Image (cartoon, rainbow over all chains, first blue to last red; front, side):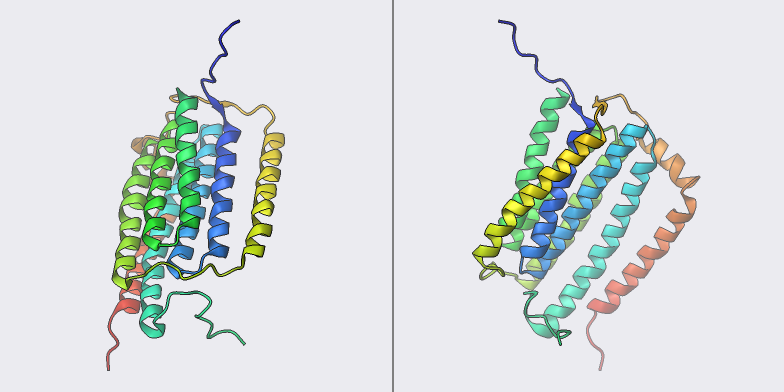
Length: 108
Length: 166
């Protein structure tokens, strides 16, 4: 009986499916978590999943453009984290809570 | 070797991502998120994106996550009391999530019937030199706009987080 050959490389689609799994988990965290900080971390998870898609397609087309888009996404994520965490600090200072269902001033 | 590395770090990424979602305490979620970002950096290296892998570790796993952990410590955020939704919604949502992922995987496999194999070293256009060349020639305008965006973000963060003046 010949030995089963181990796969030496994986197709490109596996990377895309991994990206979809990470994005779906980010969406689940965004919808199900209660703490404002954890909701924010789920958004970062979704951004990372999209970055993986960009780099994968950059590999397929043998061009560097996808890497640059990933770079810009990282820069925007850094700016977003700075401003978002400042907003979370202000909300906590004013309301004394981080639970998203207790911060409902805009509700009718 | 490529396949072993891919499956190992893909598994670490998925398990850490699940941990981000299910952990009660924000600090545990933040540390799991660092695990996701580290394993994604390895996958970037496999795809030939050296510069992006380094930037991922420095900017995401370094700077952004330190900011998150710092704010969690500053606010003294404890564990969540109870999940927001009841267990019925969770029981309905989990099969739907799996169904959605299955459909997405099917569409991806159908869309790329003969996708190329990812072999380490086949694409070497992701070095800092190549990224820098593209960044300062074709993408010069977005790069400059990015610097303005960061300046605005700095000012915004300072204005939002400062003490209220009487």
